[in-house]
Length: 208
Image (cartoon, rainbow, N blue to C red; front, side, top):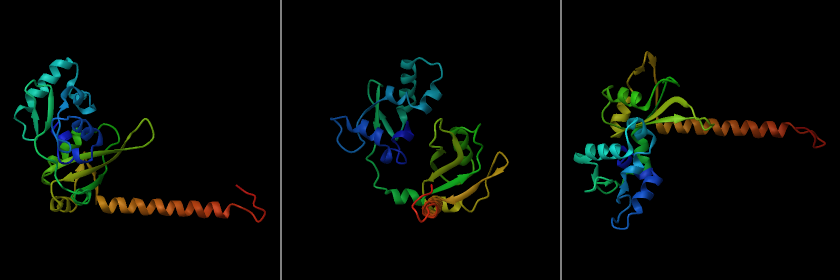
């Protein structure tokens, strides 16, 4: 729940911000109350819930969040909201403190496993780990993630490390560098496709 309302997620999470902004009594972008019952339906929350009764799980979550510095819990224990205003960090700043990591098994590694790995690698404060999935359904884990650190210096230092997950060496690259390389690859593929289409016709205008 702290991640949902945290600096790393809420600024770019349109659904969560919309829900928070539906509260007319709490002005400010992303500052309103959100039903805890709704949050408990999210995938990672369902994984924690197991066979627990819905009402009991909401009560448990409210109790755990009681001393949180990230969110406030309503007096009835049924709603939560962000405790502080949203930061002014730009997407470019977040980009600079993030890196790409590849080499995880496509099956058998959960988000919790990967987060625990990076948090134990002594890289600094890990703000978020985002697993990358295929677009085709059923969506499958690609074996790579984006890791967001709390500072650009931590992200830069992480890139100089030699990290291995379950005896497999990881490939690390700055997120901006990785995305630029993928953009160039896409442009090259499109150029080759256009060239192939241009070469496919004949003088009479026939061909594939």
